[in-house]
Image 1 (spheres, one colour):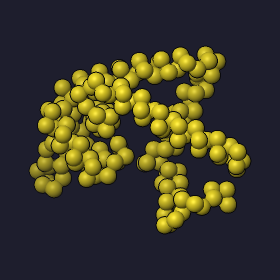
Image 2 (cartoon, rainbow, N blue to C red):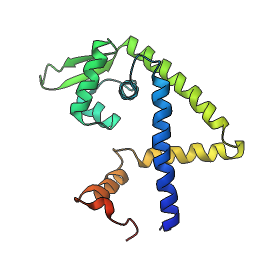
Image 3 (cartoon, rainbow, N blue to C red):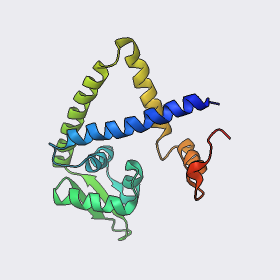
Image 4 (cartoon, rainbow, N blue to C red):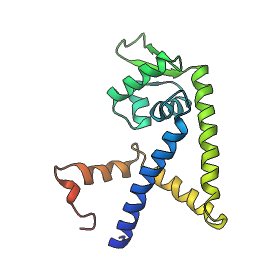
Length: 167
């Protein structure tokens, strides 16, 4: 089990990464035609069409939030929504060619930004940082059983934010 010092260090670093990373990504997106939330949605749709439920799960948003995001993307002609003939309540979303172009352009911009970020890390540590980031992303995936267990353990009871993770 991690020490209290390690837990506090990771907590502080993680919170800083979220705050500063979000600020950096939002700054990057300020010159783009979509918000970061819309970009994340387009990225999920690069893998192929999906139901609103599946897209919401892929992005990590509630379905009602995803509906509003998709409505805005549809108004910009970046996605297309269609109803299934077999189930009129089932809405499928797919990325359009324009949406694909916007998403890939933003992905390229983000990759350039990540290149600049990695350049700030000593060369002999870059592979380790990349591997650690991939591991964190995998653990933090809402579809991951470990993520579900952590969320259940930390967030299932009112007032649980004050519970100790070590005991």
